[in-house]
Amino acid sequence: MSGRYTLIATAAAGLESLVAKEVKQLGFDEVTVENGRVIYKADALGIARSNLWLRTADRVKLLVGEFEAKTFDELFEQTKALPWEAYVPENGALPVVGKSVKSQLYSVPDCQSIVKKAIVDRMTKKHGLTGRLPENGVMYRVEVALLKDKATLTIDTSGEGLHRRGYRVEQNEAPLKETLAAALIELTNWRPNDPFIDPFTGSGTIPIEAALIGQNIAPGFNREFASEDWDIVPRKLWDEALTEAEDVAKYDQPLDISGYDIDHRMIEISKTNAMEAGLADLINWKQMQVRDLNPTVPNGYMIGNPPYGERLGERKEVENIYRDLGNIMNEHPSWSVYIITSYQDFEKVYGRKATKKRKLYNGYIRTDYYQYFGKRQK
Ligand SMILES: C[S@@+](CC[C@H](N)C(=O)[O-])C[C@H]1O[C@@H](n2cnc3c(N)ncnc32)[C@H](O)[C@@H]1O
Image 1 (cartoon, protein in one colour):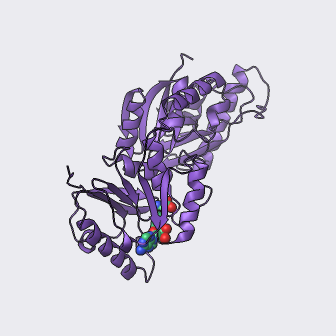
Image 2: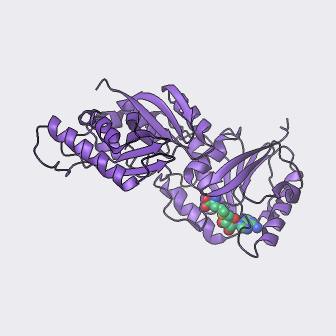
Image 3: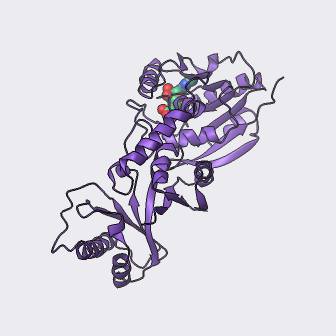
């Protein structure tokens, strides 16, 4: 292999442009943005750097091939024609997962077994084996994804999803995905020197992601990835990527980040998670209800994921929370306020129209990200 790969960073709906921005910031080129994915070129070191650094992507996949397939024969032959042996060693474990959307080949289990058979056929021939592959080595998880009769064959380089940073050892009942929390922050103009408050911190995800961004710490620094054991990304490249991450981290960058929650147990959980993330005393955690919020410095950023009031009987309670928040932040016009919620009448209850609104999905829940830009005070 030339050492130049086509990578696909998958993204939750609505986050593609942020993922693309991160991909470009990492210096990768030939970047194309599509629904749910960002495609780009990188070398083997780029596989390691993508996994370590992408904050808003779900996972990074290596593209092996893409072609039209309307029959099982076409799927088999074209899969077999791809150079699997260039990526996967003789003893690689090759589970195949699949999905099919708006395609003639709609039976996912059949597509999976055909792809598997084609890969095994190809690999046994190329490696001069008879019968089965041993599959007792490192994991290469193959995906066959059919969309409108186009088959995309990839190998997952990440392992666990990239939202699993390794720090969230405890969580509340409605935690935000770490990737979405990072996205909420990247959608603001917050700079590491600016004050930052999450008034509904739960398990602390938003402040922890802000601290990682603020100190330029690679979000994947504390975890492992499937491609760490791959021959095509030798250990020395991972070490190089980790050394780079260590070199560019700004552990001396002062931060003014606070996380509050009405529930003191959440504050304990947040402290544990922050400790796990290596951010021990960097974040100010405090048990506080929204009604008692009182920012003491100007020009801050508030980012919050409050209760949405979706459960029966919660509506009145969340309306009170939103109203209190609106009344308090009205007294602090230099603060920018960002709230994600599925509650449709948020602006009405908060008391002001948002400067900007952006549709986002929190898992399967359709939400809006209400953005109130502060007037910077001199
Ligand atoms: C949706 S959860 C936040 C989840 C958080 N983003 C995370 O990743 O874990 C909402 C949080 O708001 C807190 N909360 C509810 N009412 C509150 C109030 N009046 N003041 C402050 N926090 C409140 C809840 O205890 C809960 O932890």
